[in-house]
Length: 314
Ligand SMILES: NC(=O)C1=CN([C@@H]2O[C@H](COP(=O)(O)OP(=O)(O)OC[C@H]3O[C@@H](n4cnc5c(N)ncnc54)[C@H](OP(=O)(O)O)[C@@H]3O)[C@@H](O)[C@H]2O)C=CC1
Ligand SMILES: CC(C)(CO)C(=O)C(=O)O
Image 1 (cartoon, rainbow, N blue to C red):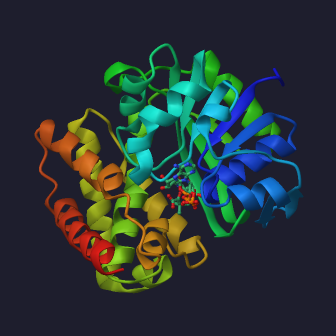
Image 2: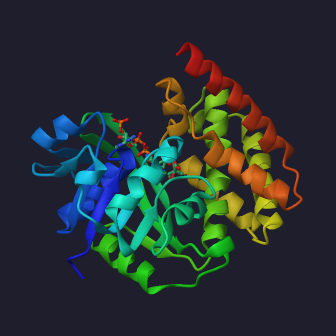
């Protein structure tokens, strides 16, 4: 069991955190980096975490996927805006009959991955994590970290609990990561969007952290309305999200420390926003299933405007 080899594609806030925890737990882990390659190769990775800081001084760091060993599990931890690179990055590094684990936010990525690499199992992970990359090879794990794992099947029909999900769960649990398994990845993905769509979108449009959005009665109401539209989107694809889940997400955010969402950080840093994965794909899927989601569509169009302007002028 312990000899499963892991590749982390994208050693940033999320990939750096989970990858470092896997290596610390004794798993053979290989990290693909871009701008931090030299630094991490020389000094390793530093994880500053509320669960305990640690440094990995020796890291298997790569800046070329062709130099990586073939791995049993390949973790996709790039921003989805970089997913156009996956046809080049995935085939050399994933073993035949291996697993690709998509830990990104958004909808429909597993489907894209399954089209790129055949003969592999594709698993999606919904990450309830607050982490930022604050310097080269320096990850700040702020809070949380639980992952909900679900296996992808054609058309996202529920896969049940599979052996590969159990194996991944064992590895991540051994690294101190809390894991839940879901029989229905599509339901899990829509549930995650209940949080990401309102907070990621409004944090950028209204230039606000989560606490500010929750404290104001108008934005609080708008958030709840957007959440209920996500529920309608899920319904259009045959998935039911109970009202109590919407309330749970509102309560969860009220209890969170004031948080600048990852989309807001990307906007402030003038990086491209993950609009298509988080807004565009769900809107298109719901529309194809006959559902109209006007408030989400309104947020989507505003974000497209802001992103284009930011990329031009930033
Ligand atoms: N951070 C979080 O707490 C959470 C993140 N997520 C999701 O996880 C995904 C990753 O987000 P996050 O970790 O925050 O993003 P980051 O930007 O911190 O990490 C992405 C990393 O990918 C690297 N990268 C980009 N292109 C390449 C390439 N061609 N080769 C190698 N490395 C590359 C970047 O390197 P460089 O810096 O050099 O560009 C960066 O370090 C997103 O979909 C996000 O929505 C989900 C839940 C929580
Ligand atoms: C909800 C949150 C902030 C942490 O649980 C997250 O997972 C995200 O930014 O996507």
